[in-house]
Structure formats: structure tokens, C-alpha cells
Image: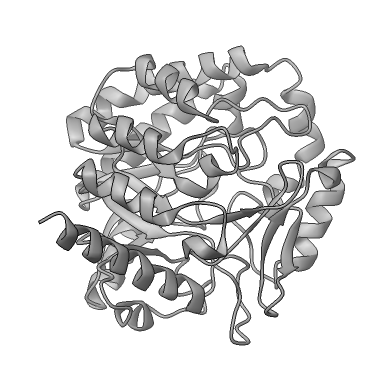
Amino acid sequence: MQNMGFRWYGSNDDPIKLQTIKQIPGTTQVVGALFDIPVGEVWPKEKIAALKAEVEAAGLKLEVIESVNIHDDIKIGLPSRDQYIENYKTTIRNLAEYGIKVICYNFMPIFDWVRTNLAYELPDGSTDLAFEHRFVEGDPEDIIKSVEKDSNGYVLPGWEPERLAEVKHLFKAYQSVDEQKLAENLDYFLNAILPTCEEVGIKMAIHPDDPPRPLFGLPRIMKNRDDMLRIEKMYESPNNGFTLCTGSLGENPDNDVPAIIREFVGRNKVPFVHARNIKFMTDGDFHESAHLSSEGSLDMFEIMKALHDSHFDGYIRPDHGRMIWGEVGRPGYGLYDRALGITYLNGLWEAIDKMDR
């Protein structure tokens, strides 16, 4: 796959070096971001240029940004959202100036993703991320403390300390936001920014809710095929697309991930894919797994075949990996298991490609 990527958190906050990523066979892209810019502020051109230069000096490309996070005032629908949207549009233009093609984003209230255990131990002694619903039935502060304790000292995306410090205020601000209101606010946002995206050639790719269910009384609007169709109709444009995360969608067993791939990739609505596996436990609980089909509950062969049959030519990366071989790092984002994931995904793609010739 010509656009295989690897998510990287920057030389100041990632123990994995770009030179190491370059050594993973078949990897051509770094999926990066500026993590030191407060949410809602404009990304400065000089910082974008520096990140791009650093990645390219290692012989890799930077064409996908994950993520340009959306300020809560936009999601809540406060009067201040218009200024934050103008800032977002300026960031889009700045990124396009430096060759960025895709922006991954999400529209999840407060928490970008939720796991209840960042070091769930598997029978082989490796650890991964897990979600058990019984742990989200109480005070959200308990989850925050758990994430902070198990993060190995790293700041996790969507769980930045300055954001979580305001969590009680945020819950109060979201009290009047139900699913319909959140969808209306996404519609407002997309209609404001997508003309700029069309102008500069950037595709927006919304990430599914993770997990795809309401949590702590907060609404979710990117859970399944019906939600995707609703978002597609908010602003009909090739620039209004999806990050198709097989794990996030697959966390709901009612979602037929290969069928969703064939439908939306077939319409050229998926510029970016997160390819990962998960293992169901009981009552909808799950934990991450190695990428192989045999290690989880998703058929990764069928997922990759659906991408191939639909002529997918966008960007793809492995997603959350286990911590293996004694590695210590950002939970879910170690080197070794994600590198194994890339090799496996590329192997599936090569086999499917040769079978179909």
C-alpha cells in the first residue's frame, strides 16, 4: 500500500524516532500534528513548516494531520464558536500551504475516546487498552484519575490536563446538548469550513465515536452507517469525508465494517483508514488485540479485501497496538506491535492484490 502511515507525536514527546519509523517496511507517511497549540488557536505556519521539514528530512511524507481538534464552544454551539471557526479555517489554509491533504477530526463531547484500562493484561503477558462499561457508570473523575495513573507519564490525545481540569464545567455546559443539537452544531461547522477546504484542496475526515455509544449522558453522532449518511448529507462534497476506523466501528457488533467500507470507499468518501482489530468480551465490553484476524473478533482479511475491491487509494495506518517485548511508552502507541501491524496489513494487501490479478 503506497500510503501506509504511522502516527507520531513529535520529537519532544515521542520516544520513537523518525529514523526508526522509516525502517518499517512499506511505511511512507507520518501522521502527525502540533500538540502544543491550545485547542481553538491558529496553527502557525512556522511550526507547520518545521514539522514538515523534520519528517521529510527522515525520508518520509507528511500529508495527513491527526488531529486539528475542535473547540468545545463549537460543539456546544455557543456564540463564541464563530471566532473559533474562523481560526480553524485559517489553520486549514496554513496546512494546505504545506502540502497537507487530509485532516482527521472528531466531534465527540469532552472525551475524544474512552478506555477503562490502559494496561489490560493478556494471557501472553502483553498489555493493551480495554473498555468495560461497568467502570463508566459512576463519576467521570474516576476514569480521569485512572487514565492519568496508567499513561506512563505521557499526555494522551483528547486527555490533555488543561482540558480535563475543566471537566466539571464542561459537563455543565453540555447539559443542553442532546444528539439532535450536537448534529446541528456539526452541520453548522461543516457548512462554515468546507468551502475553504474545497478552495485549498483539503479533505476533512471525521473519526467515529470511540466507543460508538453514549457515555456519561453525553450524546454520540458518529456511531454507524446511518450517522455517516446523515453527516454526508450535511454538506455534499468530496471534501466532506470519513476516517474509517475499523476498530471504533467494529466495537459495535451490529456494524458490518466490510459493508460500510464498500459503500463509502466506493463513493470516494474515505480518504483515511485506521485499520485495527478488537476482541469482544461480554456485554459489549472489549479490549484491543494484535492486528491478526485470529487474535481478535474482526476479520481483517475481509476488511482489507473490501478496501481493495473498492479501489481504496487513500491513507492508512495501523491503530492501537499492544505493549510487547518489554516496551514502555504511550499506551496504545508503542513501536513494536504497530510495526507488526503494518507488516501484516501490507502482507494481506499483497496477497489480495495478486489473487485478483
